[in-house]
Image 1 (cartoon, one colour):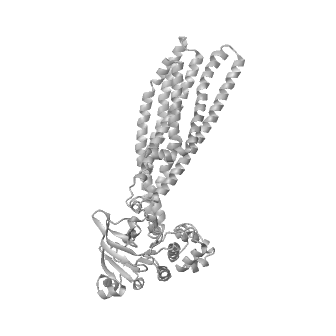
Image 2 (cartoon, rainbow, N blue to C red):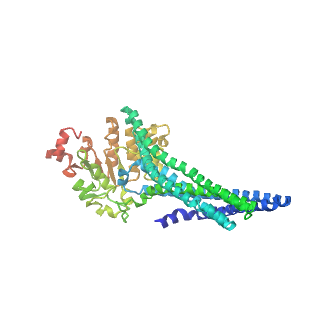
Image 3 (cartoon, one colour):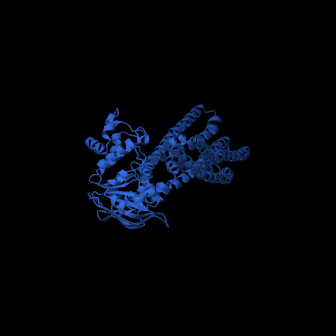
Length: 570
């Protein structure tokens, strides 16, 4: 897995990383050289009162720091660019991966956590990649270089300096562990906050109609308080980390000044040497602090990564098939199909249903009878636990999922429209559809007339989730969208359940037009629809209780007839 991610997300930007590393080497060399020249300034130019040497040394020091500044910029810019490009590629990969996940994953996952993957988790990972990893590697090399020069310069003084490092590293390591622990809690809490915001935005009408604004606010405030509490703990340890490291480093510097001063007094060390050594010591807290901060960023980045990579380990329970099916007649058969969302709790039990090409089959039954599960299985959102579902005699598990779904036009009870034009929404399943094909589909869906009454016609925006259209208009656009792909099978899940009588009549005209010549499954409780179907399948308790035409089932006097008599089917 590591090799895969390295090849996919790091190697494409290797040139940027190499440029950044080379820039750092130049910047570090310039920074390390400056104190040595400073030693010459004090020991040679000042003691000998040599103004020419003084001028040369001063210009050299300025030049070195200018080189250091310039190449530090190149280093920072290239590393940031590489990190941003890596994250952008990862974000694209995640989005693509997300849309290949099983439908059940989204049912069982919090939308807030999924959104958090793309927002806060990726931001933390970006900080770790763009700043954490580079700073850890580069500043570690910088620190090692400083220590090497110090050892070369005066090994005894260097050892005294290094004596404080183990304690500093231990303290920093403890702080980073606390940061990672609280960071995990914060990420989980933030996912709940994001989910609550998403849920609230999707149900504004209900919240306002029930006057529950204060209740929702209190829920949000509580979740926000929990997230803020964990964030404050992260920030507290972060805030403590660097000052604590700097304090411990300052103690080390004080010890060096005392010890180095004794060396100068005894004549074992020159003033220039002492001064240069102090510059190296003063430069040490910067890499130590950056390393500490880098470790903190990497800890939080690893927390984020542990959540993100779960997408790659999420098992796919619906495996893709291998067969294409360019053409199909539309004959669908369920053979002894049983299905359970959870083991031991079957929602469909040994059902057998057959629809010949062009048949219109109504699937009815009480709530919880398994009607929506029937639709989910036909679309292969799930696979049955037992039995097979065949399309033109072929087990749909053998078909590529895309090949199967290309033959099915799916219309939901609550149609989903995207924030785009009517034209773009109808073309969604077939972007290459011509304007005339879109218009023909809209006419079949009984949508053309109302579309042409809009100011911009087919180019009129529908708003977020189709909010600028009525329920009946949205449903007819959804039917047109299904028709433009020219499917052999239509699957309609309660297409008129939430509509008034006028809108229902308009949609039912569209349904009758759409189902002509197509195998159609319609989940409904509308009696007017049931009368015009070729077959009615009545589900009860997850089983096919009755099957036949509307007239046959009425004559049978069973569960279906009782539902009609009681007005359940009306």
